[in-house]
Image 1 (cartoon, one colour):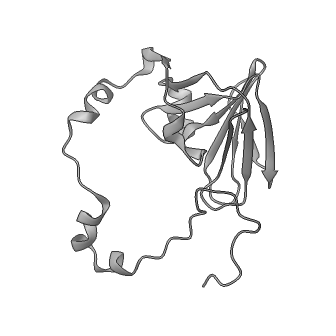
Image 2: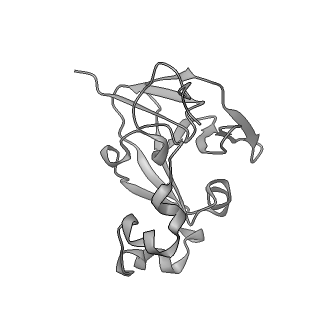
Length: 159
């Protein structure tokens, strides 16, 4: 049976589907990936060899080097792809179930920020613990696309 993974951007304007065997999930610490993701590293999943298709919307692209383009949502800014001559990798967090695609290797370790190896040692709190910090959080309504395909987005009754 062929495994299918779906995903998309935060606002739902762009969606994708990947069918087939996905084996190459990684984290890249290079400075270019840090900037592209606005993060300490970029978690990426190669879709090379799998059946990959965009099912809603069109990504915008930024040419980050002479060989690489970075795809992103032009509406919400979600990083979506790393596109190089040897294939496409999709942002792991853009998948509806990123936990099903754990990384197996780290790249660009020369750019790795030292404290990244110690993030798991930081104290942790659940999201709800922050409710006392701002009363507006009690009335927060998320406009984020749900983690599954929808026939249309956004819903017409959104205010």
